[in-house]
Length: 498
Image 1 (cartoon, rainbow, N blue to C red):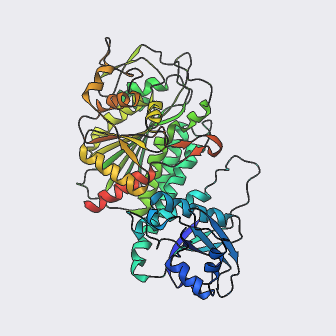
Image 2: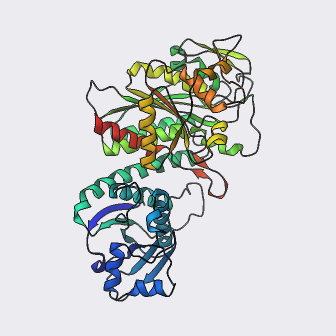
Image 3: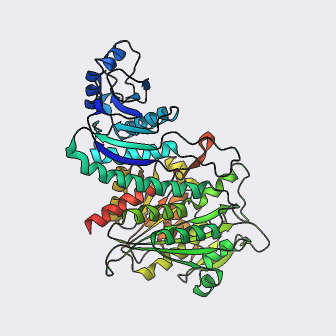
């Protein structure tokens, strides 16, 4: 059962609810709602702070059952750290801590009075939207293939509550946006977390069809014969070693006028990447099921946009295939002809993402796009450069780059601008073809983007390298749903400005 969200204007001290959540600071200062609750409870919170039984340190929580003087069943106190230092990261951590504290209680419905706390550089609308996204993420589970599933979380409904009616409309709109983004992220995470024996190119095609049916989107699935007829030689070269048939998905959302040029999202859909003949090391190869997270993020973004219905036109292109070794697989040194007509010398079959994307970027030209953004788990080099915090952002258009970076900052799904200088193109020269698919170890993420740039010269284009941000390893292994928040925020901004 999906977590529900709503808004309410009410005085916290008189509210009858399963759980009432308020914030306190490390200094002992109370938020406005916490102060109102403290007065009604005859100084209960103040006394607990004085005794040091409650801490306002960031992320600290305390659950009080049936507090005297209040109508709530539980009072949850959440620490927000130092008041003057409360920023976006700290706010999100505190909200996550509050939801985690409630997970272990029997509360089904909780009222959160947290959006009122001032966050440096952010407004109440941001706080409400982030509360929805963070809460959804905190309660997300992927147990599709477990025979013994965890009992469902008791918490079913979170109310973003306000004591001040003047912010009600802004918070209600923010909650709607947060809910749609969270649902899009969950959609993307589910696809990323599914094993590659189930999540094949055909499965992605079926998911796209179901999404299109539910939200009345346009959808088309190109088969191998269609790609052969078009001349998608680069994409087909990657698919040669696999028994799974490749698919090329085309999704369309038409919320703008007929004359409005669409934004095109292109998502890398390699549903499993062995590296092909240039075989990867065995360690952690299981995580190569996440190599379709670019495709998943496009589908997740469509899910969010279709729910919010902004006034813009959107196209999604997903080249989907496996990259497998085999008797028919492409070999290092092979030369193929791309849809653009350019020939490519494939020096490394593990640099396959750029091969399927280059044909998709050429295909995007037929839509006369306002902008094209490709999203791909493209290079390990980007992980080395930026770690698991920021997505690499490349662009041939300064305005588009800044719009994406700003959307990422607002969505707390941040990117970092990387160079796309002509100097790096030298590394991609081939003595036998128009271009080589790799440029050596130096600046590996940059040369990958430079390769793609050759196929995106006819429009405004950006490339998001999400190799470090699309999934987590270790005990919390799983897809993150990024960059659905960045993309959705960018598209909503664009729709409002048109």
